[in-house]
Length: 137
Image (cartoon, rainbow, N blue to C red):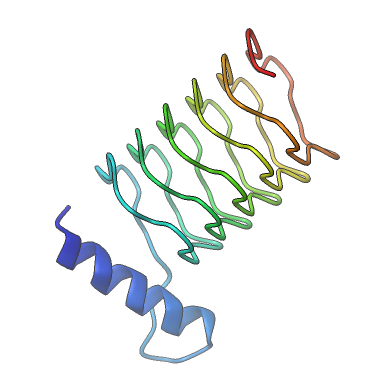
């Protein structure tokens, strides 16, 4: 996916969130977003199922209620991100930075969080069934 294509999707998603009929909910299912700069972006309610976000910068991004089922977030920067009620089942979060992230009510079933930085992360009501937390702080 090119930067221009991503920019258009994000602009249409922003309009959709504002209730504008010109807007469209972001569907980035299976998208290759490796290393993308998504800092401070609002992708709440977006579909990012099976997206490749390896090494992406999502610092302070709003991903509330987003679908990240099976997403690759290895080495991603999610510092301060809002991941409340997000679906991260089967997601790869190895070595991800989740420092200060809001994971309240997130579904992390079977997610791989090994060696993730969870310092000051909010995990209240998070579902961690069968999640791999080996080496995570």
